[in-house]
Length: 295
Ligand code: GDP
Ligand code: MG
Image (cartoon, rainbow, N blue to C red; front, top):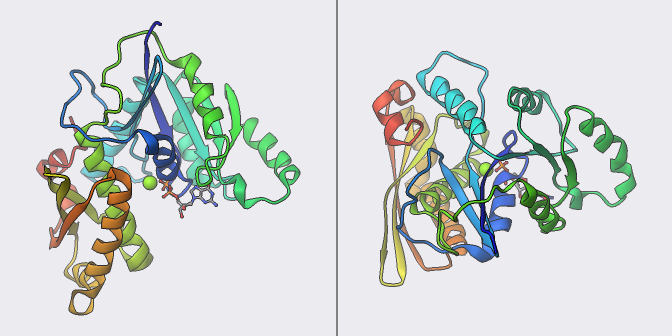
């Protein structure tokens, strides 16, 4: 059996279902070790290993329109270079809402001469599958996609088909991770993302995009994971929003995030969350480097 190992960029605008899809793909395979891969320039979000195949899903931060802030420059750079090094791209879209943000992601894909699979998510929302056909046709015509796969990240329908479609693009090579491994970094990353999602879900859209989450410590003690997270905001009133009346909001955020983290890690989690105002943090290069936007 010749081993295959490759990198996959999962791209798409916010809310198309990237996290849901990754969780679905990685779910049965998730375990955490502190072993670091020897070589990778990527921010790894998850590693899926089955038989001779190892698929490394890498994170590609979104491309922003505004070019002014240091953060946006670094993120754009990261998004662009991430696509240079991958073997295949999965462009995830929501067929019910394809907008200019999706077009921007697609424009970025077009700059790279890489095989790209169009994955059309959320098909569970549609009772009549035929009604989707004209939309699928229109989406497919937008680029020279190597395949079009309608799927549902939520129910898992056709997710296996996507994995099958990725296999031919995995080059021969040794596995970079042991079977069942996922890096410490990606577990941290996923936990930070879960917490960030809860913040946005519970605080509504008034919070700016600049709200960020840093996992300050992530340690296994016995069977449980002890996680300490720092929520950084730009303004004092944002901090008040997150903390809420007598700390009730932060408590709800943390307890919902903890449940999701436990589901992800499949071990008990003790989560401590702090909220801090860091004025002008998005222009502070040092902080950005610490947060992993640059390597
Ligand atoms: P991301 O921003 O691309 O990571 O998107 P998320 O994974 O956070 O998903 C955004 C929203 O879409 C969440 O409310 C998900 O529950 C929902 N969602 C994701 N995939 C599906 C799907 O296949 N079907 C349905 N009905 N909803 C989905
Ligand atoms: Mg997400």
